[in-house]
View 1 (cartoon, helix red, strand yellow):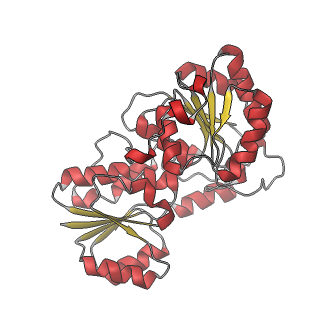
View 2: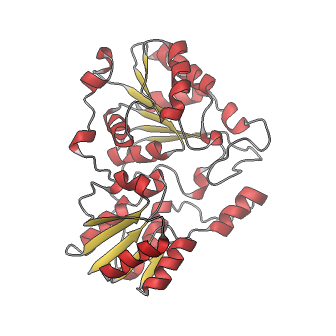
View 3: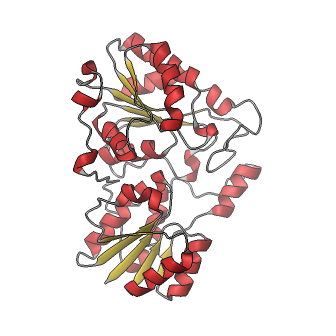
Length: 334
């Protein structure tokens, strides 16, 4: 049996397909499992031992379809479910199954604050709805993330000497402005944390675009903070998450990956919301995870993805987060 699984983007959403891949492999141990994604996200699934072949989306959709047609798939599991995957499925003429994307329900909530979303159903559970007809069910074991040997960061070399005994990771970046906790509030949070844990070490993680913000935070807090933003690849940053005592992060890909290592996690939510079924996913694990958000804010959630600016101008969804509450959450799970 040859099975194609499709998820084009983004980091967190692709990471959350790992239970699907594992459970498909369990159900069909001899199957030839292929995974189709965008080239920039290949590293997220490149080392997954359950995947036989990784296929990258070509800039020409027709070339991609030509390559897929040559594979002669028996079934397609569509975990992206958009116009492009509709075209792929239509032209391949292969039995396919898609998950409920709930775009209308999300639009009603973000536009009119009318909540018609199913309650307490995670995105991963909706992914599994695409597998019902092929006899694949959720094993409850949560996420997995596989690193290459070269991605494992030796923290005794890569981090300051006194960080080797253990550190917190604070993920300060995100793709959109309205998902990012302001740098001044991160400073306040770490300062409060150090009042109760004066020997704590904090590694700031993000992309190159977050490096300046990381420098601002480190300069104001001191040597207990190391700014790693832009200094490591995505998978090397994942390795730091894997080695952290506790992870604190915005609603972004690395935060969503932390449960793959069963990490105590505090996630911070601004314009987006876990009501969309996108909270960090731990499966049946009893690991502690804390969600920090400004509740009962009339304008929230204003988006399912994030925005480049606050449409109201006040950015209360992040500016009103109580950093004492964040630190209390960290202490309760560390």
